[in-house]
Structure formats: structure tokens, C-alpha cells
Amino acid sequence: MAAMGTFTRIAAAFALLTGSAAGAQDSPGFLDVKGTQIVDGQGRPVILRGMGLGGWMLQEGYMLKLGEVGPQHAIHRKLAELVGQEAVDAFQRAWLDNHMTKADLDAYARWGFNSVRLPMHWNLFLDPSAPAGTTRFNEDGFRRLDALLQWAAANRMWVMLDLHAAPGGQGTDLPISDRDPTKPSLWESAENQRLTVELWREIARRYADNPWVGAYDLVNEPNWDFDGQGGHGCEDKKNGPIEALYKRITSAIRTHDKRHIIVIEGNCWGNNYAGITPDWDPKLVLSFHKYWNRNTDAALAGILKLRKETGRPIWLGESGENSNGWYRDAIRLAEGHGIGWAWWPHKKMGFNQPLEIRPNPGWDEIVAWMTGKGPRPDPAAARTAMMRVATHDIAFPNLIQHRDVVDAMIRQPHDDTTLPFADHRLGPAGVAIAAVDYDLGAPGIAYRDTVEGNYHVDTGGERTPWNDGTTYRNDGVDIAREADGAPFVTAFERGEWLHYTVAADGAGVRPGRLVIAAESPATLWVSLNGGARLAFAVPAAQGWSDVPLPPLAFQDGTNRLVVGVAAGRVRLQSIRLGR
Image (cartoon, rainbow, N blue to C red):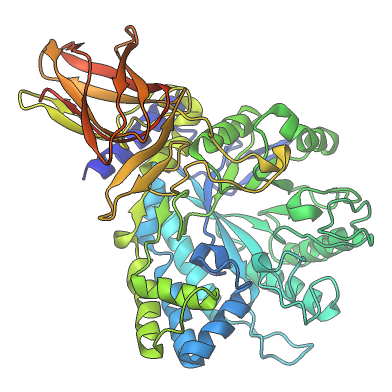
């Protein structure tokens, strides 16, 4: 209940900061294009704040701890070796049934999002067994899309339709499109291109009159070498095949639908528009994707230049997979330039998105076997574990809700204050504060850590974690867990600090202590309500020990407590006040 209370505060704070572009009762209508802006049906500018529903209709391996195995079809093939194809088919059906539900979408609406981006796999909408040259539609995908649109309408949210896995696959980055490199790609097959065109024609026919379809995002992240340079098309100068296919798709869409905006993406995972001249339709929007680089104006220089030259709106159609501080800065940067966004992904087996899947131990055994790190599980036990993942573990009530991530995306880009992560009330009996429950807020405001995010695209090197333990929270603060699962702050070192809001029932000097561990002597400091830093020594000790704090004079009501490290490196379990 405390977690949901914090979510409510986040949404309320955001509503007060930004207001509402449209009243609660009037319909915003179809998204449209007005100059370089995306607008609603009344011509009012819209900043899209959305989540990408990655992992639902297309299972990327890393979201399942199976990144080493490869694309979805490779994962399913390997699973079938263990449990049989019938069990894999049942697993896939259950996954599709439970991964994205009305409860998920209702939550995103409560938290302040106004849109979602739906990554679609072509084989949920087209029958792969249809003879070449024919088109047979698969109603399973359309049925699921219809349900999503109903939930979206109830929440007044737009759904951006994204063809994430096109027939044949659109790039040499195989997992993002479930591409099989032994078969012709989208760019190597006239039949695959025909199917792509026909799919979009049918989507337009079915949804032409639905205003909650926000846009048609034609092909996700093309990354193909057309110029013979190698790689993912980042250096290509002539992306003519991409433009030609986009024109064919647009023409097919417009046979049924003149109203919806059309989103296009360049080569090089959406960012290389060389040789693409977006002048063939009045409702084109240019998408770009942003990962692991600095959040400065220089990072947007190319796409801003393209917006100015073409007169088209731009949209940050995909970003994420980083720290909360990076999220805050990236969204602040984008919105400062009038750019909406969709974050990736909304749910996975990982800690740095709003919803985390916590798989049962049987799934971890399957992962170990599939990645060559463990023995072959018993097939019957594996089938049980798979179905529990697909029916229980991914269901909304059983997910870990990361309110720190939501706060970083929705409130923090507009608000430099902190919010309490938990209710720390200092009464007559004192209070025990878990060290990991420092306040919600940006780096330099709620905490300071020597590593605040991943910038490897700009700095070079490997992708490295910001929270070394990759658990509990998505800030730069390093968090590990005890054998019983209890979280604690680890690698708390010189120059780092944590900020806590404490509500005191009455003024007065109160004693305090830290439950702390230090392998070698260290010096910490504590400050209350902006006062002087009071330093104290922490001796080396085996395991957790109590270290007294200097006396602290609390004021009645809200107090700001900061604990930092002046020298050395420690682990911090808790702060005990008034006892």
C-alpha cells in the first residue's frame, strides 16, 4: 500500500506541474500534424509520453534472461528440444494472454502516461503457412490489438502501431525482428515486401476510424547494409530501398485511411535518414531512437537539423535501458525541444523499467541449461516452470512495481525536488530506516554516486551497470541483497551520499546509529536540514555492527537527513533514530 501511495503522489505531482492539454470530458480526436508539431484533433500540441510494450508480441531474448540464445524462433526451438513443440505453443499462447492486460494499461494511465507503442510481430497478423503470392490474415493478432485499443480508449491513451518484426526481418540485428539469417530478409525478398504492404493495407482498413490508434510506425529500426559498407547501415548514403518500401506502404494505407499520421524510421536502428526525402505524404513524422549517449543538445543536433530542413515533426520512438538519472535527463532534453517519447520496455526480467517479472526458480534452471551453464532440467518440471512464468509470474498483480523508475520518467523531468520513497516517521519509539529507502529524486538531489548511468556510446567500452547489484532500485546507488533477500546499500564510497526525508513528531535532540559494515576504517558524515556535516569514524569490523551517530537536533515535522562518505568504502544496512 505504501508503494501505491507513492505512485499516487507521483501522478498528482505531475498533474499539478503540467496541467492537462484537454479537459477530462472532451475527446482529443485523431493525432495530426501541424507544421513541426504533433497535435490532437483540436489542433493542440501533444507531447506523447509513452511506454513501448516490448516483450509481449515479440520475445526478445534478453528480456527472458536468454539473450545468448538469440531471436524468438531460436528460443522456441531450443525450448521444444526440452519440452516438445506442443508445450512451447501452449507457453506462447499463455504468454500472449497474460503479458499485457487491462490492469497493466490502467496502471500506466494512473501513473501519467498518455500513450503506448505496440511492437507487432508479423506472424500474429499474417498466416505464415499461406502459399507464396497469397495473403491470409491471422485473427489472433487482430483480436489482441482490438482488446488493447478498447483498454486504451477507456484510459484515453493513444496506441502507436509499430511493425517491430516485419516479414523476413529488417536488419542484421536479429533478435529485434526475430530474423532467421538462413532465409531472405525483408530487403532481399519481393514476397516479404508484398506481405508487409498488404499487412499495413489491412491494418488501415480495420482501424481507419479509430482515433485511439495514434500512428502507423511502418518498420522498426531498419539496420541493413545497402551500400556494401558492412554493419547496420549507419554509414549508408543511399537508403533508397527503405524509402521505396515506405512509399508503397503509405500508398496502401491511404487507399483506406487518410487521417492517421505515419511514422517512418531511418536506417541504422532508425537514425540514418541519408537518401530518404520525406515528402510523399502530408502526415509524416520522423522517428529516431536514442540509447547510451549523453543527454546534451549535441546528441539531438542531427535530428533537430532534419526537423528544420524537412518541416516534419520528430518523435523519440524508442529509448531506455539505462538508469533513472539518464531517463530524467533524456526526457527533460526531449521535452525541452518539444519532442514526445516512448520508453523501452514496459516489462521484463530486469530492474530498470516500471514493471519487473520475477521468474520462479524453475525458469532459472531452464535459462542455465539453455545458455550452457547448467544441467538439463526434468522436462515435466520445465513445462510447469514455463507455464507458471506465462500465467503467474508475468501477471500484473505479481510484478515488482518500480515506482522510482516511474518517478524518474514522469515527475523528475519537471521537478527538482525529492519525494519520500517510504514513510519515515520519528516518534517516541524511534524509527528504523532501511538504507535503500533514500528519497526519490535525481542524482545530486536525492543521492550522489560515482556512476550515475551508462554512456558507452559516447565514452566507448562495454555496457556497465550503474547499480552494481542490478536490484531493488534503478539509480546509481549500488544495492545488493542478503541471503534472505533483504536489500542493503553496498560499495558506498568516498564522495557519495544519500538523502532521506524524516517526519518527526516533535522537536528535540535524538540519538542515532548506523547498522554498517566496513572491511577497513572509514569516515562518514551526517547532516540535518542543511546544517554542517558532522564527521564520525567507522571502525573495521567483521559483518554488521552498530556505529553511533553524532547527536541530531530534529525539528517538528519534515526533516532532511543526509548521510555521506568522506573516506573509505562501506556497506550500509539501516539508520536507527531515537533508540
